Length: 109
Image 1: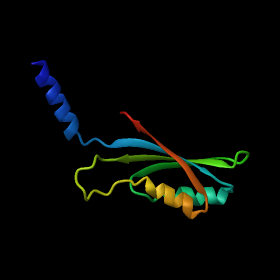
Image 2: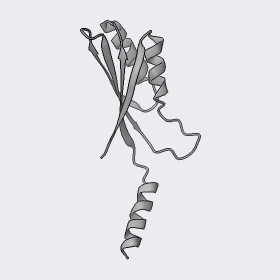
Image 3: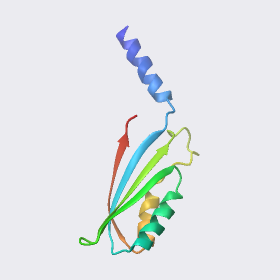
């Protein structure tokens, strides 16, 4: 009986199509001004499923951290258009900065 309960619970989680919220933190080396920060934030905001963007910049260390909140559905098929973390690296590199480390945090509702 207990086995059936856990099986049903697991099956429900698999079919649950609730959106997933993930925070991506991408650190990079940078010397930047407010206009570049604003431009990069606008570019990232245009990416699929992005709901919030913030760049934390520490000029004394010449480092920055791109923080991106993404809300998306679970992948249902290969053709689903989902957020691609590699797009963050491309945006950082396109502005002439050196990407460092990407970390993620999945938020539980």
